[in-house]
Image (cartoon, rainbow over all chains, first blue to last red):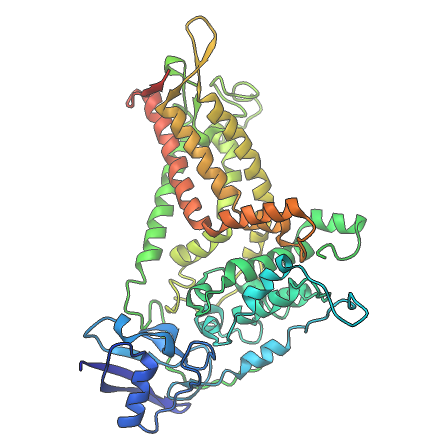
Amino acid sequence: MPEMTFRIWRGDSSGGAFAEYRTEVTEGMVVLDAVHAIQAEQAPDLAVRWNCKAGKCGSCSAEVNGRPKLMCMSRCGDLPPGETVTIEPMKAFPLLRDLTTDVSSNFRAKMAVKPFKPRPPDAPDGTWRMDQADIDRPQEFRKCIECFLCQDVCHVLRNHEKHDSFIGPRHFVYAAALEMHPLDTENRLADLKGEQGIGYCNITKCCTKVCPEHITITDNAIIPLKERVVDEFYDPVKKLFRIFRPGNARR
Amino acid sequence: MTRTDVPLPQHQGFGATSRRDAWWAQPLLVFLGLSAFVVYSTWAAFQGVEYHFSGRGANYLSPFYSPELFGDSPHAWFGPKPTWYPTWLPWSPALLILWAPAGFRFTCYYYRGAYYKAFWADPPNCAVGEPRSGYRGEHTFPLILQNIHRYFFYLALLFIVILSYDAWRGFWFADADGGERLGVRLGSIVLLVNVILLSGYTLGCHSLRHLVGGGLDRLSGRPVRKKTYDCVSCLNRGHMRWAWASLFWVGFTDFYVRMCAKGVFTDVSIIG
């Protein structure tokens, strides 16, 4: 069986370095399998977060050859043959140890988004009626597995570390799922423009490119939210319309 | 939100990355493509001559000069260069109008992402280090002005109507007896393809998508808006391809008309 060389980041918050490991690779193996083999045979103290190994839990996010990926969805056979494979932790988050990072800032950011606030029930039994056509858009965003690869690749967080003033693509997807929901009555636009910093996004589409669920983050979530913010705060004609047609025109 | 600062295996500095692929190729191609277009279109706009072709009864007008508000060609709406035009300003009919389609492209969501990478390295590409640490994005002045995009879209829509008329006129050729007959020449096809590509790009605009239905939470019960939203969304999915195809072709259309006017190209008859 062929062997591959893996260059894995080893270290914690006090510092670290890359360590090289060689391990056998069989057909169909993914990078996470190789990391597990290294952990079992050569480095039992190697820290790696994983769970489902099926691309659905979003736990094994890392950077394989510099590209943010789920290790369980990265086939070894798709990597350049004969070359050393570099595996690093996500760079937009504080390092815990080896390949694990502290992604808790994401949960705090999520809590800052105003929650779902449905209109009063449509039926006496407390249920609502929705048309599938209206829920198609939010359903795309519900595919998110919270792997935070989009947060990792976003240069506003990764390079400029604006975690305090920019909630990032994952949470714009979350906000879009709520904001575009046909039952929701909450208005999140002032938050998005202000403390959640949607204006920092400069539409590089890197988030869309790394999404393992293929959510069209930029075109279907962020840009539509930017346009709604324009409606609310920057478009003088829309403002004029609102004077004559008060109320929420989006419903 | 708070964040604990700890040492990370960060790649700091311009171009620093663990990526092994040719990450620089895409921004380089965008840089070369957009630069070539800007150089050619600026040159063409300042020429002020050979922007229309009437040889053998043709009616071609370069899209860089349409609508020709003031000018010397038969296409001019309001006659020749106005006397009130400042003498110290360079004159060309294109300079009066090109700011509108240029503004539409400059503020376009696709182009923004592309030229921020290619011209400003912000970032150079995904997961690649940047040359500067400060960042304001489109959150504050000056880039907050990109939010004007929808107004440029309204103007661009007007241009599509005018260019459609130009394309239609491109199929009519003057007779020796003073009448007009329908025909097809290579120039007619060039003008038609130009307006088709520009329409595909303009009608797939993100702002239009928002205005026709994206801004609503419920499209059920609004069949016309739903259908329109679906159509715009369909074009929007290929917005990048439409953007590049229309950019290339609008430049080529000017080049074709210019070469015909110079007598370098012969406008080949296809029908009639």
